[in-house]
Image 1: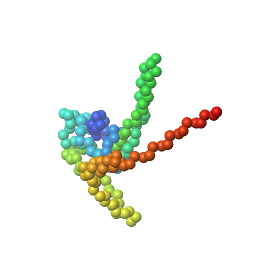
Image 2: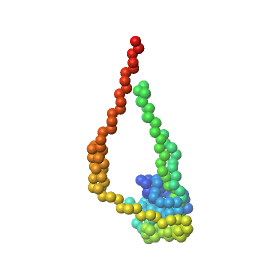
Image 3: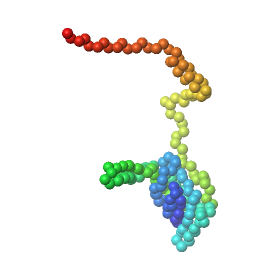
Length: 170
């Protein structure tokens, strides 16, 4: 069975246990992702094409890793004008392993959650310290105004002594 899904403005033909590379998605490695924009489903001779999406169909996968694509070089040049600009770009991508394709009754968020890591706190970890609430903006502005006023009223620094001209030899 295969499905055609849409993500990141692109369409991908996927099958179960296939690893695909798509534009970066939010989530850690091992997290479950779900695609509900299924444009077509197929199983041998039976094919269903959505208008625009297949109702009740969905695809689930797991994030394998986050990576960056190959470097793309952007080079601009105007001949005989001494104009050259070189830029590079690496697109951030996510590798996803497709775990299942659901043709009917797909409900978003119904997938089994990944097993949580050990939730017991470490013995050496100290509890987080709460910070005092920030001062209101008006108080900050007033204190800044007081500092500038204090600088203006402070006694001026004595001027540096002027260097005397070198003595002329007679």
